[in-house]
Image (cartoon, rainbow, N blue to C red):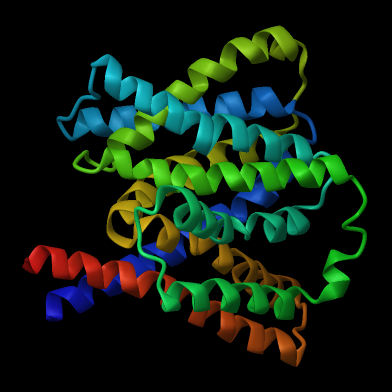
Length: 304
């Protein structure tokens, strides 16, 4: 019982860490694409992060699988979780604020829930998860307020691109279950290397990166994004997919909004309306509701 509680606490801490790393990524992307073309920016992001993880695997005495089947899975995961959604968001943030991108991306758990309930059905649709989805939506609305979505009708294609990326993330969380049994760092490294292999040729043809003149800020943002918000975040992500399930893991998207608000309060002196604090409570309740069932089922399975 104590081990189960400790594991649950660890998972929730990792979920919070993942939300922070990915929440910060939208600001880093916004800074990066100011002087680096989106495709090139994401190609370098995936390549650097992938190489870091391959090196980490080597230091641990592990090697990536070499069979075609596994690399086919890595490639599909790359399309769903890095190459396509990363590029869509980077392109969109050329004209869309990082805050709005964060808000739109926070709908990932909704799409994960719908895909799970209507198509894959690999996780049970419980009342707790229904409550979690609803609480998360209500919480986000209370936190950001309608004024935060002012102008959300502008740059419609960019915003639709972010929504499309969000659907990709939801599908990736479900597809990630195919890597059960592998060290979490392996699908993270393999999918990032596969993503880089897809994007680098496109970058060379479309962007001609040798003609770019990136600023120091953009380069630093790219480095931070690759190391922390990609390499480290992907290891945590694949770990949580196995323990919390796809719907539970995507619940971190709800946490991005209050984390972003908290950063504004602490570092920028922003203030929160009373409804925002209520919204934060709703978000936390929603995340707990969406993660606890998966953990309990895992514990029951291990007992059986």
